[in-house]
Image 1: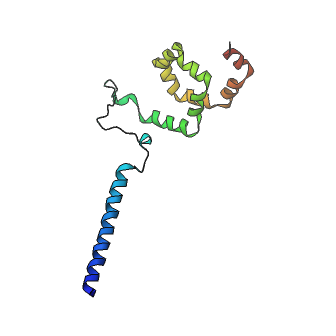
Image 2: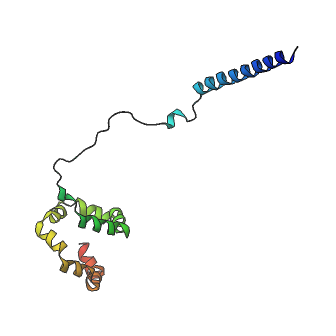
Image 3: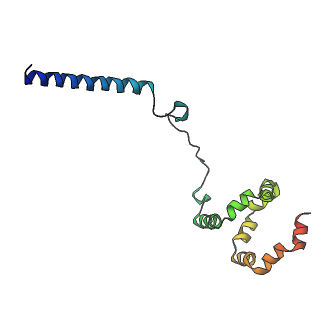
Length: 137
């Protein structure tokens, strides 16, 4: 055998090995997926999004967003949502009526009421035993 014919056999053998490896990879990839099928989820199609057509631009204003961010940052919002007393309060129709009352909204937004609510005297009143007793009646 000459040197040229040996090269042909080596190249032919190498090509056959590469071809067999390629066929093996394709065959294995069709029968086994890298991710288990039950753990793969998804949807193809158009998603439906509810959009409130009656919402106005003033439904959320900058001031209410800043107040919410402040409550959320200091953890009061999360504490309120987990408090069973607050959950019961939000279910009360009288509370819902109070929140929608224009006079109450003006009072709650007034600077005088804000100062009162933040004062030490008001905080002491809220924590007093007498107020707690009245609250639970």
